[in-house]
Image (tube, rainbow, N blue to C red; front, side, top):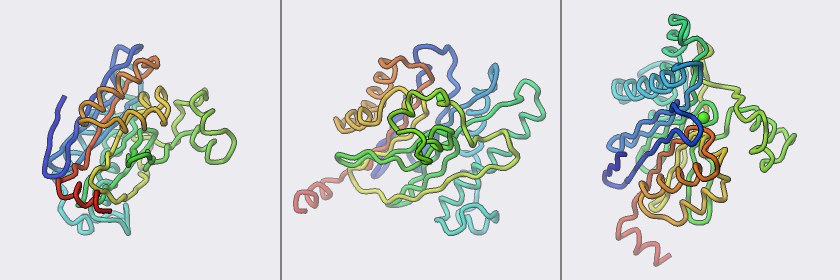
Length: 269
Ligand code: CA
């Protein structure tokens, strides 16, 4: 699996079919040079799920490679009021949705295909995040694992409405029911977020094969133990497998590397 680095980021990714499924419908992109990271979790009969997640990742990466630097000149209403990179993420997800929707209508084998997406793009000292579905982004800081996405799922809606406790949500039968995905509708709205980054932070993107198997306090402990992004990816996948690995598992871990100077400043604070 790739381990790439650039000035201030170290990143790694790992995907695993889990312990039950023979195919893997998750897909990811890790472009550390561009500071761009994507996880998609596909769905649909036969090979449709695998096709959907790969198509979505490829469309997003392709669009962000081609799109003009200034998203405001690219037109489109997505993400007004956000940074150009966040707007470009929103536009890339929209385009990716259009491709999937068209493919599902053209090709009977791919009817009903869809995918989640969570994408993060580092813009200086900020991470721009866009997502649809129940693949998640977290930010880890010492002692704290903060979810920076909120699932578009029936279970999350029930938690938000106070109908079930968050702890109960892991046992819910509605675990797989999404309220939003790429593919089924001609247009989709991505949720957008922009979060400041500090040296020493870790960013985690993952499919629900991690979060339905491993409770958040345990994810926090594993990231807390530290080590390289590759080491953390390995440990998270191993933990999900040890809890049953009922679904495909994908994790991307990005470390915002502390420079020696950051360490000195940290000691002085
Ligand atoms: Ca999944």
